[in-house]
Image (cartoon, rainbow, N blue to C red; front, side, top):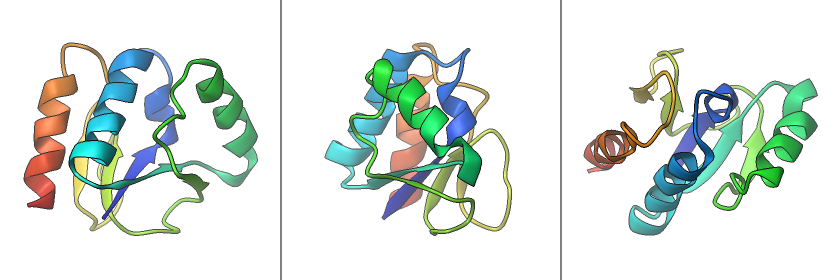
Length: 106
């Protein structure tokens, strides 16, 4: 199953280590394929921003909006796909997000 992460969730106030932890648990513990979703003109910018912070380690690919289906990690529900909604990924909500992701894939 895909976990589609809306790219703006990688920006502050998100913290890089909790971001990596949520994605690593999703990939390694849940066997999910992690995809970053952003607009076409933003791919290189997000790749460079995230690579410098070690945030790209568990991401398989960068996709365009709604190019793939799967569970979404987003700031809002954008269509009928299952979505875990959060404003950011930080130490205080990382465990809650992991639990929400696990609950949605069972």
